[in-house]
Length: 276
Image (cartoon, rainbow, N blue to C red; front, side, top):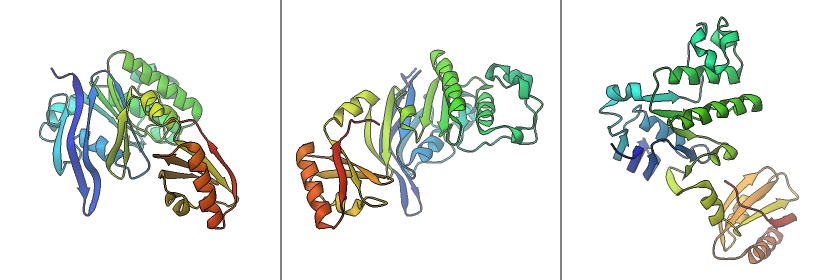
């Protein structure tokens, strides 16, 4: 038996002229929680759907529990649980008492489409686990769920992980990604980083600046052209800038000069600690 529950080997997937995944490789050990992180359109959902055999790769190889997820889809059906982004159960069905473990028993007579977002996700999770799968695929399972339900959802996942279930999860929440034993950072279909969350954070130490400007939004194009700037992400009226080849002091000086030349008034340029 392979030590890996899931393995991508140089996987490529195209949607017409759009390359959703580009030469992506990673492995997920059995019994681990693996995170797929990245912005919208990064390729997270495509990777999840390829793993579940719902899509066919255009290149490379995928191994799921020792099998090809597309060719051996029928054999893998009982070994995989899949929870998609949207609640996908029949809304006019009632909830059976066998989901009491998920604290849904008081609602078992209620129509599924009358449940709150958090309760719907707990019901959907219960249904993905009824057949006791070896591998659980979660595609942004807590998006739009209230904070209390998110915490309860994560308590359940921790219990299943302790029992040896392998979990692969796409998430837009960085605090959730930091709970994973290993994460793959995707951007425009490419694998940008693959490591344990603390090691990724350590690799970025001393490379990040926060830029706040006197404008509704920072000038991303101006910042991106600064020599020594490797990446820029916008967050409202501020931007997070990743440096490469220069220290934070010199980076801040160059950014200040570029903003002044562009006629943009900087409110502050300061070093920040790395996080996912």
